[in-house]
Length: 156
Image (tube, rainbow, N blue to C red):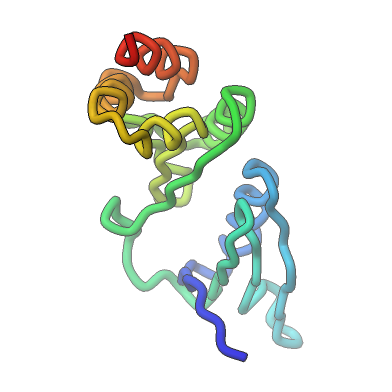
């Protein structure tokens, strides 16, 4: 059986904290396996699931700074889930950016959107898609109710 997942290299002393933060905030997330070398203390490999997707953290030292070019796109079911994730990253030292982007305290970039936005961007009506996208262009943290209002207005 073959499989593929993203592996993220982090300093060994950050690996466990990153896995714990992400899995504590994102729905349908868990730390699945931690591999430690005897006498080394900090983990070498952590297998985790974030919102149903498998990842691996390699605690071998950072191999470069994270950039927006490779980021996480997290879809959550509702505003409550979005706020829980967003507030958790901010409380841990994250920073808000434009258009639904937030940088976590470890330098990784996340775009966090509610399902209503994803549904609207998949709508066959180009006016609905445009309204949804233009709405988040004016926001930092996405307001799901504002996206819903814009979509309804576009539908007439």
